[in-house]
Length: 337
Ligand SMILES: [Zn+2]
Image: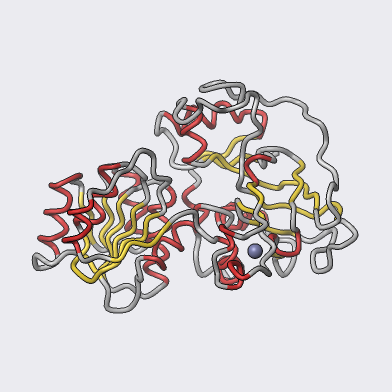
């Protein structure tokens, strides 16, 4: 990205092994993330250095590994998260690899590329049982971020059997939080969306109810569906003031909010929080925690998260992919190098 709205595909220096714990992978699929749209729209870019490599979602085949890499081998098909992590520190072992003491942001390395250096390869990457069939690749790359993030949102909101789960946000993460809630056994899943095609996919992923209203009206609609109580679990997958307050307001006392939308200029008023009696848990998803389980579900074709990709483009046309997501003409864009 050469600046807001200016995405170009150009030659850069070829990634190579820098640290002995690195791997270099040949990217089979990458994608454009909702969070890539913030700099694209010029939000929070005051301190950005242009041009910046882009992309933090990736799956591909290992080309080369450093001398200290033990478990990851050339030729394996691998998926990693948007944070490289050692997976051995105390924070990682507690399941919070996105806050690993050694973490490295993959976005700074640029996964929207044909080759990618992955630091801390043993901790970061998870290999599939074999080279996947091509039709599994979109679902596998979704595990790198959107599926892993939606899953964490549902886990953080404590979605599970007997629970009513509401999901704020009908982007790829929100839709996959619906899928996660279903897989986690939720009894009732309320998707908040005003778009036909997104409502359809939400229903396919397990939504039992759709609420079109937003803000206070959205909160009132959720309460109406839950005997005036609110949902047990609410996933916030947008990251605006309105969506956060909608999530807190739609949660019953004692319930849980899992917030995974990147919060831009969100300020939660203390008194609203105080009286809500809800649990708040969220942040950048520790996707690495869930990767083995998600890869298993995809490999066995139990879930099809790749359906959130409604536009697939060759990497050379990345700029068109950004445009389509910015205009909301596409839910999620898959890029094939
Ligand atoms: Zn760690």
